[in-house]
Amino acid sequence: MGRLQKLDLTKGEFETKGQYDTRMGTLPVPRGTLVFRLESPAVKYDADSQEMEFELRGDEAGLCLSLPAETTPENTPLICSASECEYTLKRALRKSGSYVGSNPFGVKQTIEYSEYDAYGVLISAASPIQVNRALRSADFRFSIGAEDARALKPFLVVEFIGELDDFLIDSGMDGHKPTLEEPYDLRVYHSYVRFRLERVMMVDKRTNQSVADFTPDLKLEPAMVYRLPGRHSPIK
Image (cartoon, rainbow, N blue to C red):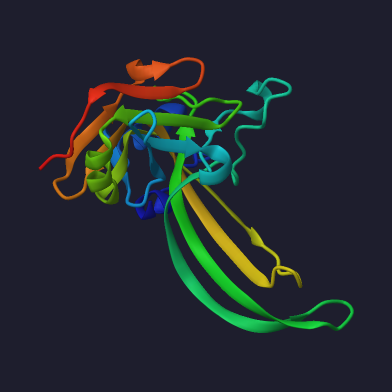
């Protein structure tokens, strides 16, 4: 991310398109397959179906398809804007503290203040792994017995595998302004790369071996459920 932020990606006034394309092709940027790991994924077990499930959900996790607004059909929730449609992989505290604030009527309140840097990915619309556009979600499930699931769940991590869609970084800031009812001041500074999601893998972090590998062919329409057949056991 730091390397991308320092790059000059703008076509120069005296630079031809051919020269610009050549320069872009030689930039020192990550190329080929990349892996982003989620150390604390939203994994849960369904004892009735005996399936372990990882749910990507846009209205909670921030997942999006990076689609231009004009391509979004009417009556469909807006899928993407630069500051809203991210999937956060890492959040780091910049600073925190407290101060005394007051409203126009002179009522004073102690306000808790914090600033974060957030880093993550914007899921490209061209990604082989797709998301339900209306629900902003996709589920990844595999069968496993209850006792094996109980032993495995604390050690499960999820990996996003794919390639950068381009070398641009989407950045922005959002947060929460303090009120008497919610006396906290939050600012989150976002930096996200555009990413072609090709596989989603559940990994046992004790061994770094795959427990479930989800590829585009496992998708069940129309619910955007990726289900891995067969029963799995934790790797010993």
